[in-house]
Image (cartoon, rainbow, N blue to C red; front, side, top):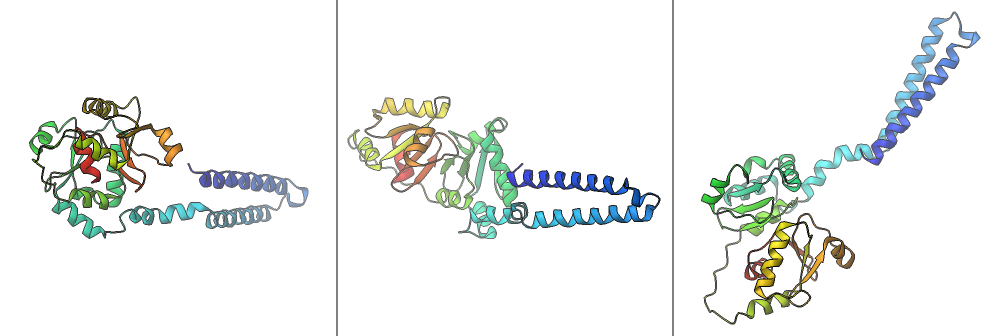
Length: 271
């Protein structure tokens, strides 16, 4: 329950108790004994006063705003697209959402899709039940929920309410791989130039596997990338995260959620 709901409920209880006490006091008074009609009239008037009081409390509370304006709040996350445009983009890009039912963020993502009326335009796969389908589609999620476009082959992990941005990101064609075979230190230099922060937690398996990959690739904390816990990132940059690991570019405020398999893959997300 929200604070507003608790306040309204508390006020309702107090007003009800007040009405009961006043009614008992009036009914038990010597002046009204034997006059049942007048007693009932007094009770009716008090009940009416109580009802009007509750209506006024509701009209002037945040509860009404919370009930009526929630849909507008949800729609504001996708203000760049109308619902029809977004539905068409989801279908055109053959968007797949891979969820894990043990994952709280996956459950929230499914609920948000349902509320947005977009669930029917997304193919939902359960990572525990649909492993064969994921293998056929070449979908390899590193975190959940995981978004994937069958049209472009792009994938992106993490909970989001800005579905329009996810679709725009996934609809971009994959860049052609360079076969120049340059110096192995070049990816590290490009990574350093990005000034990225990786936000992690020790209990996060995807975070630990990404950190292990960094160590094997020669990525140095504080030189090529900055590693911070979620609390440290909140204090230093004021950034909050929806899933881990999260890569954050503090000069542009850009965030990318989910683990990566290589330094080059991380660079592609931001270049």
